[in-house]
Length: 130
Image (cartoon, rainbow, N blue to C red; front, side, top):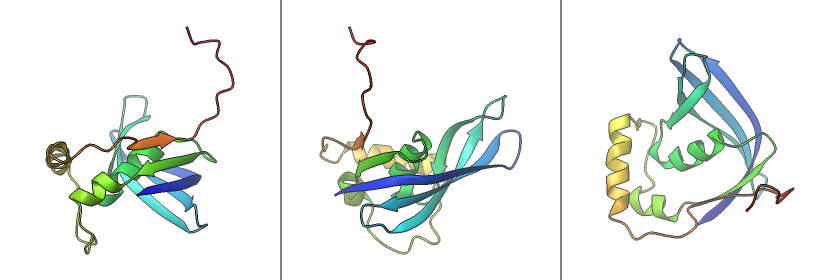
């Protein structure tokens, strides 16, 4: 299942010298707005260098939004994640680094689907090619 999202806003909060939170406000292809967020790891210069979603089903979306600029559109293929994660009450689910390792191993045993992540971008120049 492909979904298209536009990133409307991105906010960062710092909890400590090494941890923070990044919140993304987005809109889907039907105009429905929502927010998702994840915990970030910060480098020595207090820049976010990685992010982990708390809800496993949101992990591919949060990972992609982490690399997306405000007002950009992204397309994400969720079928493989939907094969691994059933829809259920996610209020109590929290994703840890160990959980993500288990997720990655479990997803390796699933059939690969091409186009897991497509980012909509416009090529402005081909000077750097070749």
